[in-house]
Image (tube, rainbow, N blue to C red; front, side, top):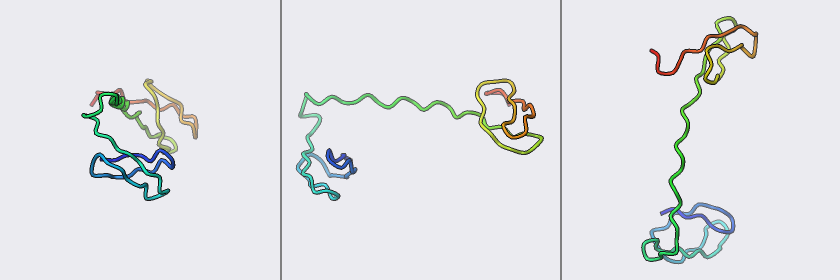
Amino acid sequence: MIVRCGRCRTQVEVPGPGRYSCPACGTVMEVRDRAADPGLVTPPPPAPEPPPSPRVQCPECGLRFIVGAVASAPCPNCGALVSVPQRGAG
């Protein structure tokens, strides 16, 4: 199990509940068993990451850049209009 020191925020791997000293700053940490302590609240799972934005290459100058959900975008380097392939197509 990995815990974070409350003083220096260093992540420390510990075998389970107990008292441990932080290897970075020496602060004593008390790790409790979540199942035995109903007062501890389990944090919600992290939100899923959004899908990556499409990256296109300018046919004029070769610059690769990220675009949003648009049909076409101007190249930030040379200004040429670059068509953006739609997600799910192809």
